[in-house]
Image (cartoon, rainbow, N blue to C red; front, side, top):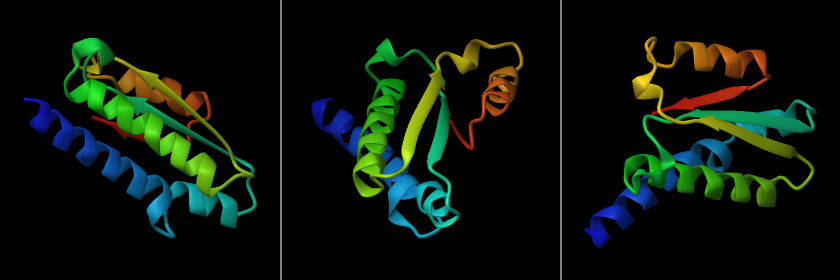
Length: 111
Protein backbone atom coordinates (compact mmCIF):
# COMPACT_ATOMS: atom_id res chain seq x y z
CA UNK A 1 0.00 0.00 0.00
CA UNK A 2 2.79 2.44 0.90
CA UNK A 3 4.54 1.89 -2.44
CA UNK A 4 1.29 2.39 -4.36
CA UNK A 5 0.63 5.64 -2.49
CA UNK A 6 4.17 6.87 -3.19
CA UNK A 7 3.80 6.15 -6.91
CA UNK A 8 0.45 7.95 -6.97
CA UNK A 9 1.87 10.94 -5.12
CA UNK A 10 4.86 11.19 -7.43
CA UNK A 11 2.65 10.86 -10.50
CA UNK A 12 0.28 13.61 -9.39
CA UNK A 13 3.12 15.88 -8.29
CA UNK A 14 4.95 15.25 -11.57
CA UNK A 15 1.97 16.26 -13.67
CA UNK A 16 1.34 19.39 -11.62
CA UNK A 17 4.99 20.42 -11.59
CA UNK A 18 5.37 19.85 -15.33
CA UNK A 19 2.33 21.97 -16.10
CA UNK A 20 3.41 24.73 -13.71
CA UNK A 21 7.17 24.86 -14.18
CA UNK A 22 8.55 22.50 -16.79
CA UNK A 23 7.47 23.75 -20.18
CA UNK A 24 7.89 27.12 -21.80
CA UNK A 25 4.13 27.11 -22.33
CA UNK A 26 3.45 26.56 -18.62
CA UNK A 27 1.14 29.07 -16.90
CA UNK A 28 4.00 30.42 -14.77
CA UNK A 29 6.35 30.88 -17.72
CA UNK A 30 3.62 32.52 -19.78
CA UNK A 31 2.75 34.90 -16.92
CA UNK A 32 6.37 35.99 -16.51
CA UNK A 33 6.94 36.38 -20.25
CA UNK A 34 3.85 38.56 -20.60
CA UNK A 35 5.04 40.88 -17.82
CA UNK A 36 2.46 39.87 -15.25
CA UNK A 37 3.52 39.74 -11.61
CA UNK A 38 0.87 37.34 -10.31
CA UNK A 39 -0.53 33.90 -11.10
CA UNK A 40 -3.63 32.45 -9.48
CA UNK A 41 -4.36 28.74 -9.85
CA UNK A 42 -7.37 26.83 -8.58
CA UNK A 43 -8.00 23.16 -7.93
CA UNK A 44 -11.31 21.35 -8.00
CA UNK A 45 -10.78 18.24 -5.90
CA UNK A 46 -12.91 15.12 -6.36
CA UNK A 47 -13.20 14.25 -2.66
CA UNK A 48 -11.97 15.36 0.74
CA UNK A 49 -8.26 15.98 1.31
CA UNK A 50 -8.56 13.90 4.47
CA UNK A 51 -9.26 10.73 2.42
CA UNK A 52 -5.53 9.83 2.52
CA UNK A 53 -5.90 8.61 -1.05
CA UNK A 54 -6.08 10.25 -4.46
CA UNK A 55 -7.33 13.65 -3.30
CA UNK A 56 -4.80 13.75 -0.47
CA UNK A 57 -2.01 12.98 -2.97
CA UNK A 58 -3.35 15.54 -5.44
CA UNK A 59 -3.26 18.20 -2.72
CA UNK A 60 0.32 17.31 -1.82
CA UNK A 61 1.16 17.75 -5.50
CA UNK A 62 -0.57 21.15 -5.44
CA UNK A 63 1.54 22.24 -2.48
CA UNK A 64 4.76 21.00 -4.08
CA UNK A 65 3.95 22.64 -7.42
CA UNK A 66 3.33 25.91 -5.60
CA UNK A 67 6.70 25.65 -3.85
CA UNK A 68 8.53 24.90 -7.09
CA UNK A 69 6.87 27.74 -9.00
CA UNK A 70 7.76 30.21 -6.24
CA UNK A 71 11.34 28.92 -6.34
CA UNK A 72 11.61 29.03 -10.15
CA UNK A 73 9.94 32.44 -10.56
CA UNK A 74 10.85 34.50 -7.46
CA UNK A 75 9.25 37.71 -8.78
CA UNK A 76 5.90 36.05 -9.46
CA UNK A 77 3.22 36.30 -6.76
CA UNK A 78 1.70 32.82 -6.86
CA UNK A 79 -1.54 31.95 -5.08
CA UNK A 80 -3.84 28.97 -5.21
CA UNK A 81 -7.31 28.11 -4.06
CA UNK A 82 -9.02 24.76 -3.84
CA UNK A 83 -12.45 23.27 -3.26
CA UNK A 84 -13.01 19.76 -1.99
CA UNK A 85 -15.80 17.23 -2.62
CA UNK A 86 -16.69 18.28 -6.18
CA UNK A 87 -18.09 14.79 -6.79
CA UNK A 88 -20.91 15.49 -4.34
CA UNK A 89 -22.01 18.75 -5.94
CA UNK A 90 -25.31 18.48 -7.85
CA UNK A 91 -23.78 20.16 -10.91
CA UNK A 92 -20.54 18.19 -10.73
CA UNK A 93 -18.60 21.23 -9.59
CA UNK A 94 -19.53 23.60 -12.44
CA UNK A 95 -20.62 26.33 -10.01
CA UNK A 96 -17.31 26.03 -8.19
CA UNK A 97 -15.39 26.44 -11.44
CA UNK A 98 -17.49 29.51 -12.27
CA UNK A 99 -16.69 30.93 -8.81
CA UNK A 100 -12.98 30.27 -9.40
CA UNK A 101 -13.13 32.21 -12.65
CA UNK A 102 -15.03 35.11 -11.05
CA UNK A 103 -12.37 35.19 -8.30
CA UNK A 104 -9.59 35.61 -10.86
CA UNK A 105 -8.28 32.08 -11.26
CA UNK A 106 -6.28 31.87 -14.45
CA UNK A 107 -5.74 28.11 -14.42
CA UNK A 108 -8.21 25.53 -13.06
CA UNK A 109 -7.15 21.95 -12.44
CA UNK A 110 -10.05 19.54 -11.96
CA UNK A 111 -9.72 15.94 -10.86
